[in-house]
Length: 116
Length: 110
Image (cartoon, rainbow over all chains, first blue to last red):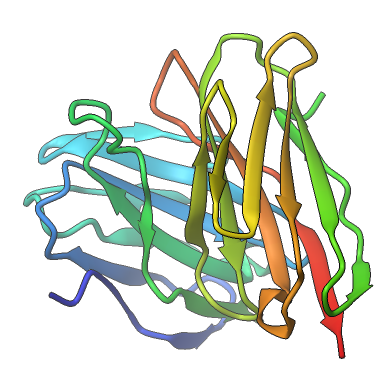
């Protein structure tokens, strides 16, 4: 049971490049989330999904896109990378609100992205 | 106004000390509350959920005050291994978004 895995661990992008951050969970969780964490700041929600085929915007969705074709995978796409997207990106999953004390979020190890 | 506010610290305490963190939230309709722990350059991990009646897990005690809209975390008999950033997290009863505080930094000194 690997939990939540993210790839890559580190990446340097040039301004204007695009990339996809991968996230996979093997816990059969319905809910998945993408956060970014800037130095000294709290986690900000970018996008989330409550199940395959369903996604919704969080607090800071601009410049990102997501898809959820399977329960396990929730990739985050950056189009036209900008320096403001330099951050640590965390993917998380949870059972969601349908199972008792199921709100615990399990986080992946993060992707450290630098845009220069 | 931020959804969740925490004193960033840092809190530097000697081993064995008792330390308390507070967190305030702005949405009175919030339904679920949590404390997460985040070690340097690592992912957050759930420390404990916070229940209305207050709850304890070993050296850790969490309390909720709905009237004043704050939650607290008390750590007794601090250990060196408690050094980390503690994140306050709130889930409103509408929507599916968790709101994270910026975290409170704790360093336990030998």
